[in-house]
Image 1 (cartoon, rainbow, N blue to C red):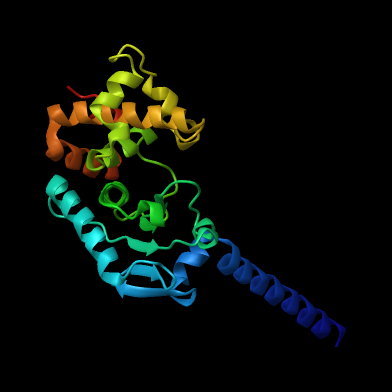
Image 2 (image 1 turned 45 degrees about the vertical axis):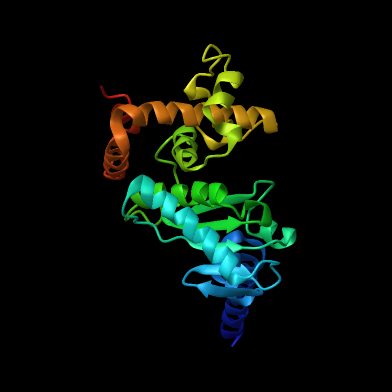
Length: 249
C-alpha cells in the first residue's frame, strides 16, 4: 500500500513538472508564442500571414506591401522555396515576446522553419524583402534539417545576401565609400562571422558591418551570379564547406 502511494506521489510530481514546463513554454518562449499566435489576438489574413487585430492599417494595405516585397525577391532569385510564417504587430509588448528587439523586423529561424516578425516601422518593401530573403536562404541551407541549430554560413554572408534586396540608402555604395574611406578601412570578415560578433556594438558599429557585408556579397555576386548563390546554398546544405565554395576561383 505504501509503495502504491509512493508511486502515485511520484507520478503526480512528474505530471506537475510537465504541466509547469508546458505552461512556461507557451507563456514565456517565442516558439510558444508563434505556435499559438492565432489565440493571441491575431487574425490570419492570408495563409501563414497573421495581423494583430489592433494593427492600424487594413488587411489590403499589409498584403500589398508583402506582395511588393515578394515580387522583389522573385525578381532576384526566381522561383522561391521558402514558406515562412509572417506575424505583424504594432504592439511592442507582443513584439518583445516574439523575440523582436529594437529592429523593425526579424526572421527567426527554428531549425528549418522560419517566422518573420514585422513591426509598424518595418512595414515597407525594403525591410520585408530583407527578411524574406533571409527566409529563402534558410530554406535552401537547412532543407531537410528540421532540428539544425548551428549556423551554416557566416553572419556577414547571411546579412549580405539579405541586403541585396534592401535598397535603403543607409547601406548603399555611397554609404560604403564613406564608411570605409573608399575601401581603405575594412574589418576582416572573420571579425564579423558569428551573430555574437556581428550584432554587437552600438548602432553605428552595426550599420558599418551591414554596409561592408552588402558590398562584399555584391562583389561576389557580380562574379558568380545568382546561379552561383543558389548553387552555393544547395552545396552547403549537402555538407560542403562554405569557405571552400565561397573562395573558390
